[in-house]
Length: 445
Image (cartoon, rainbow, N blue to C red; front, side, top):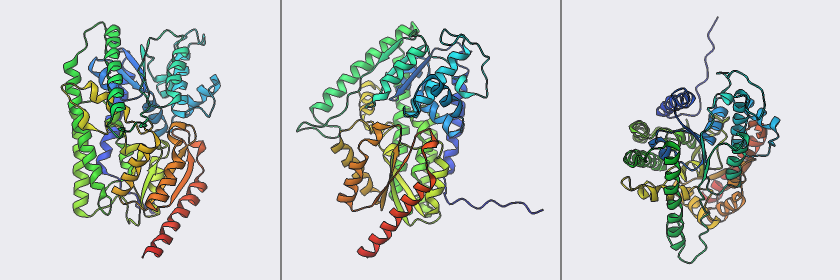
């Protein structure tokens, strides 16, 4: 009997990103054994405050990251079912709904007053395996769900868990001197967030009963800064034709820059990624077999569909090169970080979350990226349960058409709930956009 030969994939993924999987697995294994090792556990969402926690030897659990991990492993179902059974509606942010489902499952296994039922934790059910928090820190940039998510989590644990809230204001950019990283509003807002981060450190000291280890934070932020610089260098190389790496490669690389332990290993990771991208540029090797179209992706990625969508676009000979989610977040401005005095630069990086800009600044930044990477069109993923990201998307599409003359395509999906996807809709919308690109080329030829 002849062996079945699998067809060669259309997407030529970076080999170096496989290292990320190992780093991610090691991190979550550390989280799952944290209680057995006597560590304090902090649940947080939104901004990457994890270096503050790691420096203090507190185990950190990023809510979106845990939900994304479950979805990427196609194990989000039990958590989402637990949340919906508890009354959290399907239209609630699926990051939050999945993570709250973990809290519900956690309570059920702890025989807490919430349920009165005790079950042994199931190692195969990652929803119930998440260790309960000893503290919660809310540090969300422009997301109406963020602070409510933390409050709902607190209620699930009987309001017994201490919470600290960091307010990260929206950057309006409405004053005459306002702009990206400049103006009186920027300076005042940066200082306001930095003051709160210093208060957060006092909260951490109260929880640990120890003086805060500032030297360790300084060392860690040196690693974060260097890793971010290498990541951006590799991204910049993708202006080459064919593009050596894709948006989907950068999606896979989010965890190392966003929530994994800060140390030499993340510098080594991004050095390896950067070197592979440079080698591909030198060899003329692309992220897909045959690059006919260059696209920008606006929207949060659906973690159930990363590989699936990468292959789908590659089959259309479409290289998805950059995106708002990957190219405008996650320590995006390393030049602002002074490792010897890191708090202000950390505050400023939290402020430039791509959800946190007024539309004029946000749209200018996106148009600049589209021009930089010389894209032919824009794919817009309207996440059904993330209003913060989808709110400006019609304005973004309008600007892309009017300013750059490129067609756009919008389809609905979600961040961790794949039931909102309709494959035939994605196909028809993308195919129509590619036909529009071909027609435009005939006119301009």
